[in-house]
Image (cartoon, rainbow, N blue to C red; front, side):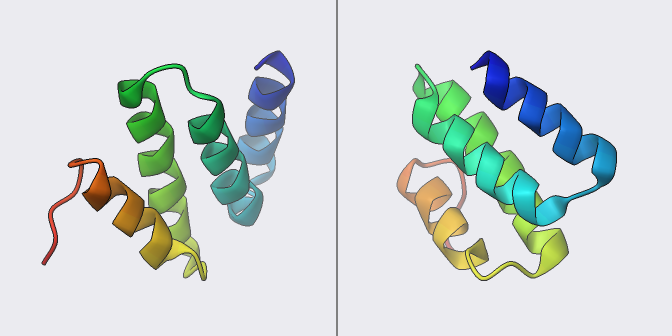
Length: 72
């Protein structure tokens, strides 16, 4: 995940929230544990919320399915 880490750092440095949503979602897909997957999905969700990203609901639904977020 070295390339992905570098791309995440670059997106953070430039404040590119749309790219951060995508990269954190990709990191979640590559994660080797449920905790790591939840960590990355949570970050993707937070940046999606800040941006008003179209995938905000889907990211939240994934976290709910994992038991990491509670439905309203």
